[in-house]
Length: 279
Length: 244
Image (tube, rainbow over all chains, first blue to last red; front, side, top):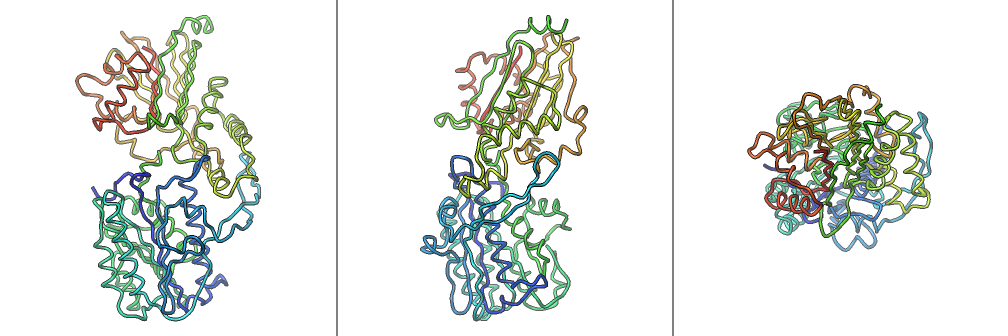
């Protein structure tokens, strides 16, 4: 049965975030922040959650390997800086040890006695917003395909890699669908790599979440991204349903023009493999 | 009256082995007494310090088996005193804030088994037997139920909101009795063993008869090792309390 491999230190899984950093990502959202800034914040929170879900009091366990591929202008590079910039994919423990900086933020928490307390919380930053130049999406997906192919070869028994691709639209270096198809054909013994696409846009239009068809998508870029997206496996479909989304047989891992909560949920649902090792 | 009956109770057998034998780290915790109060807790593998949390839960249950929101709040307060949150590095602070998770299974054997009160949150189960036959299980009754994510007690109060919708005296409790049973026995176990037992409850020989032969820690370790090697038992910390 696909997507059922136990995730363990012997058989980790891989999350790859592919982030559009083209010039148009500096457009402001309705919330008054640039798309790039919002995506960077959600990515930092997602990395924080991934590290936390592998952490115990005595250290971080390498259940996950994580990479960020950033593209913009003529560049496709790792999205990590500092000690992590040497390669694309790193064990989660290395991610936890090499932040760009740790900020202090305030977090509201249940005090256990019916009240709320505000606590100072250390918050790590790995990824700063950037936005410049064109959108070399095809080159980025080709680089992703090479990375995923190498990972699958080294981890044939693992839960397959999950790729979360965030973009605001049009590829400027040619059609990306062929690279996406190649990516989706890569596999481990536990199933094909999963490619989920998030189309962030300031151009308006109704929010479309986990659709089964492209009939309601108005522009060709959205339809291309829909066509590039993997169907949600059963356990992720169930999780998305539990979060209140309408899921049907064949729902794909694609969101168009999602609101901020929807974007947060996209990352949360995409990074929720069946964690058998959790118990 | 009850006190006199309690002093007559036999001490149940109790065994626990870790997920990895060579590792020796075991996040299960248990308590048993001749007063007829037994408790068992299975700490979730990937959470901050579930071993300490499981220990606190069973010790507190043994001292006071009346589970209430105040009981849980006091247990959380005891756990939080183990760490200075603000001085923790960010990774540990994040994990501490996320919380430590554990099941809690508590049993009170009253008046030599006239009443057996079982309390459970999570996927550790109690099994009432007559001879080699399973008469009742609580809170899970089918092997398939172990594939769902269990709701566990957490040191982060926000994760315990599921308890707001629960009737503590109805949803979390089962009342059994030894009366009317020819060869009554009571078993308490964590999820790997619970799944093993429920997935072969109709087998011949019955899983109860297999467990009945396990009388020493060494025999329990060999039994678990063999079942894991045969692919019949999940690799996890595994604990059994058995009142034969």
